[in-house]
Image 1 (cartoon, rainbow over the protein chains, first blue to last red):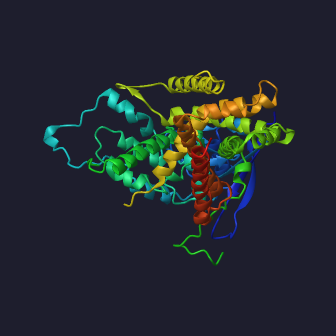
Image 2: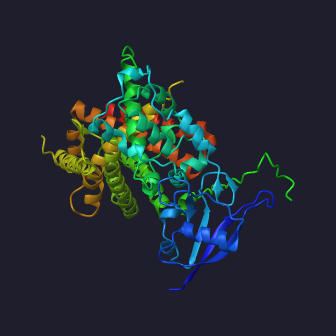
Image 3: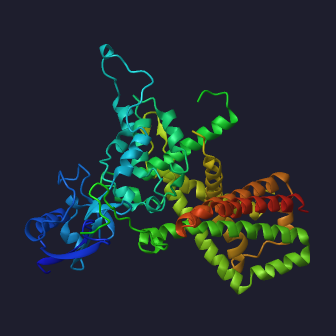
Length: 248
Length: 138
Length: 116
């Protein structure tokens, strides 16, 4: 096995280029290196202008998501050697998002969607402080815990074939997070979220490709969250049609 | 300096999605194949209806229908459709546990159990179909 | 916010898909593949007529094929949207898919009602 590998990196410097380009860097192939280590090596030793996001370097912050050899991965959690099978590793910004510069994507759309689905505890009435904390049993926690593990890395949006085709689509992570709050016993906002989620640009754009759950580094299973919600939204729709007198 | 670049209005690069995006990755090819099984389901329903119509149209029409049904090109198509129908059943059963999350009290039923239940139901319903057609209920 | 009517079509798609998943392979094998491969005799006209004689059988069959048509219509609509990026033709596609499914269901009703 050779001791170096070719890193093909997507470059886009809007102040200099109209179209993006690819730069090739030769980096050491160290067995303990992640893709992120290779990128840091490039920036430190070869080309300081390379721009990319990273922070915790341990797979919990969700900053370093990029598309490597066509697959969306966390670069801090992917071994360089595992991707270097053909001596070449291709790194580009997360697919599905506009590119600001080099490997940096614009994720404002996702942030806006988090607000749209009200990804926080919604209460009709707040409990006064004097009454103490909201109590929750381990069983109640278990209902939504899986969906609370989302680190907003957006690998699921890069894996979803629908999202680039339909930018209005709320998307896997936002819907999984909406479900995280819907299923939280402290939350009272399920009704409000239904109006947002049960729309064409909500769950109904999803065709259960399932790739989002495959690439999720935290096993959130957004695809499952969406399909469960389809069942819920459908039964709610039929109930309101056939039994309109029931309070919604 | 690129003139169309404005300091406070950066020109972000948007990548186009190719029409045949689904040919570029095995998982997407499997997905589209799964979706195309709907054509098999539609064809099967039409063929079933055609057989019923032929029977109600008389003995000669029905014999002609059976002749077409047993002809080699139609047999080949039907074998392909059967593959599609089996692929539909298989994928549908494996996706069901993701959507059908059931709780027994506070404990969630394991996905494998939901899947097992579906396979059991599939075997039972298939048996019922065979039993019905061979006249077991008469 | 105005409620989307997608749940209705998705329900039809789901019901059709479930029935097709459980019943169709057996139906296809018994009626079409087994006779073709010489494993059994094709269903005779007498057998078919006697099977379809009870009203509930014909009603059940009508529900089955209609849901199969709507399963196809809904799924094919999204296949055209995403597979061929034809979402801008949503009116035409809806007409072909749901209109087609409706027409086929009516045809099925006519066939099964007039069966003798």
